[in-house]
Image (cartoon, rainbow, N blue to C red):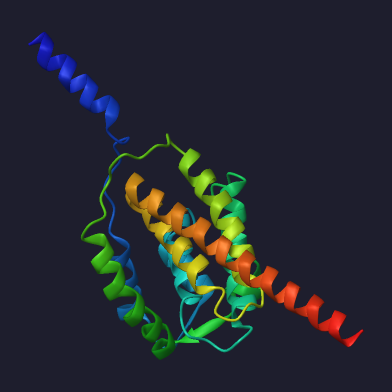
Length: 219
């Protein structure tokens, strides 16, 4: 019995902190799409997800930035992501967005276009994602992921052609990892995030070098 108790204690020590299992993000987004009538504002989305639900907001705003949109759209769509990530990094308990963002709205059809693209991909990810090897205790994960997402969201808002997709993808992975307490997905999202920043730096550095070379040729 004592050996079994020791094995149980060790298993509990190695496992991720237990928490009540909530609805998966794909289910939440599907319900939002079903209930959408007329126009739906960013404030409506935030209130439905819950003011404490940083992870769903992180995933949703990151997904907006992964859609094929006109150049410069990331400067606008990246701002809510930047604000949410900053609040997570500083340890806020409530997700706050300024009025000029919460009042922006999408038609029900536009919102369903987003969710129709997001949900199938989210469902596929959720089939392999589960609580495991979570390296953080209590709110530390929120702050660490918030710091990483803040750095990534800054790169998302930069006017770099096709430079926002990979950082947005990494941010979405990190938000899903936080929602499910999946340490493996957190590691994958972090690696993708580092790779995306390397790509952005290479593009910016290459553009700077080309500009310098061009100006030297003119001079």
